[in-house]
Length: 113
Picture 1 (cartoon, rainbow, N blue to C red):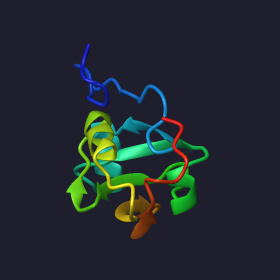
Picture 2: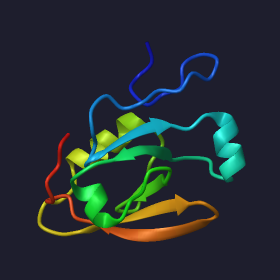
Picture 3: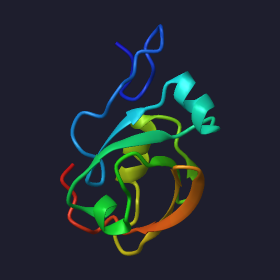
Picture 4: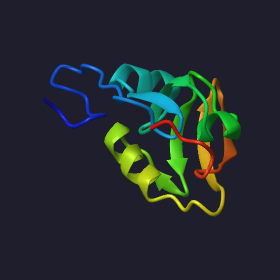
């Protein structure tokens, strides 16, 4: 089985198990990357209580970077999230519909995952 967040042989999508910073996320298929005109990132499937909700992240957003680090897959986002400082907000680059925007994410906000 592929690592969490990787695409399996044939392009099968992988989702996060549990929440990351208050959101459930999944990898993008090659077709989705092409349609969205991105070469990296993960899709937000669901936002619940916690840092993501407080930052204004929405269902359907594509997370491209956190703290300047490119997000390639679900497993990498989990690693980055675990290393975020708890004492200050960090910038998150999000693709929402046809535009990109920066949001301020405070990792110290209540996190379910």
